[in-house]
Image (cartoon, rainbow, N blue to C red; front, side):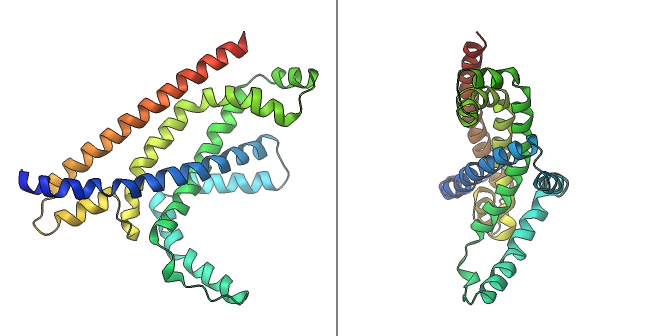
Length: 234
């Protein structure tokens, strides 16, 4: 074990954490909102759109994440450039950073997986509660945000936490398209003297700490939402 390499490389690997967290939080923020919209559309069985979204979810759940990442990185620039040419815009594809394509691919994955989590959680809420909301004069939007969604989130929280932590690890795939996140930085630093063991030990420690912190946060959120659901049931 090369202790000197660890001392020198560890701060540089830590410096890559912000780009990893950027991918995680942006993908989750956009992906979970899209997932909730998809869940509502599918639950209401909106004609045509519901079937299209079902195909999208099936595709995202069947294709490896790295393939989706490659499609985003190699196909999306061509699509953007072609669209720009059609409308008369000269778009500089090279100006778009690789992290943007990585976030796009990760967001699609989060939207697909979280939509199924949200759909199951919303379906688990007793439909009689919606009727009770109508009986006291609430609109559908008020009933969803005040009564249905908080209870559904309490049910969905454990699975959402798993998706979040899984995404933290999944960001390591962005290395394949030139994003210098934690794993990429560790690999690059270890190449000159082949210090791969030390590099992977450090990345293991970092991912373990990040996973522990986020698991703890989701557990706290889960407990609070469970208390809300218990009060609502009373």
